[in-house]
Length: 177
Length: 314
Image 1 (cartoon, one colour):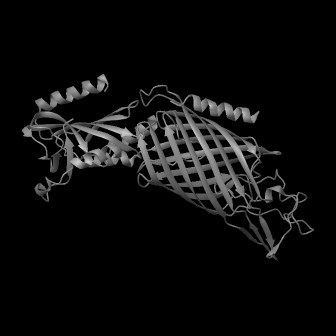
Image 2: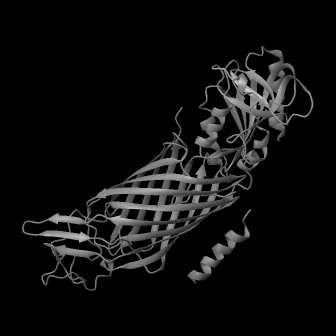
Image 3: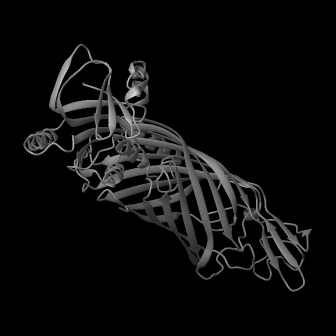
């Protein structure tokens, strides 16, 4: 991770502490596979910028990593973010998001509802206390490399399904890296 | 000499494999234009033919309908042909040969719209990794045009109407890209109703094949979209086609000593250099010459100048 990206993330995290915490999603780091030229990265950046909840994108051209900053008070859809990478003709290697979480203690198969989406925490050892900006890793077919998802599939149980109401748009499997 | 040149290029590619480019100037890779993006490409081709300078322009509009499905609509203009064959295309003896003007080179023709070509491409396989991918796509092309094309070899990007289809496989690893394309062409016949007779030219069905290689020379390390990209390519492009048949009032005409109307096969080498500015504006310069056999649809050497830009919509 470059120093500039670290600095930008720290600044965003700082501001997220001091401002109201209406929108829980601050930013996401998206690893992109199949990219090999700056013209491809440019097209991918343009595709991501079409999303109404995206404020800005910082693309690390040599590492094929996009740091996506979200707008305040606009619900975020990680599924739509992933789809924009595929629309540009490439694939998602990994997605890590920085999310503001109210003080909570989670265990394995903990179900958390944020912005009308259900986040199902998997592969959590023991109890973990979460508070404030937290990095979460997304697990899913179009949210990581296909081969890596095969290894995670075993941990994706249906124990949170009972909490899905008509208001819930998507269920995401996530973990704390 | 040519062999040495090819070996040198192959060795150069093999020795320096380490980000690559698949933006081949002549044959499209298996990758598609991004969804909702419009690309405009203008391809200029030129060659000297006896006392004429033949030039053609292809105006191509590419659009990504989905991430896997795209189309390219091309409008091809040139001064290669007329709408009718010369009146002495079939000689007084009832045959066609080098003694007729019809298959002679160097005739003057007006610059006009030759044909249009609609290419539909579907990427059906993708295996993307970090700085590498392997992709496969199938294409279907439909062309319409009524040029008095006087060679057996069909060319759906200019000379003929007809239908073509094929498969492209592209592998990209770091700085090196390689792509193979194989397809078939079924051209439309040319019909011309004269006062007292009907002329029909049945062009040969063909198989088209190509091997394209690309290498990213600059930048050494990507830092910004403003860095100019310099890519070099070497493409091997060819066709194998059946002989043409010429019928007057449904009666087959004897063709003698007219190699352009005979069956044939060839392979050309087309090295290119490509500049990309602001990660969008692409300019290619290419040169083409025969390696095995030759094409009778053009003379050699071939010169190309291509310019392309993507347009992004909000």
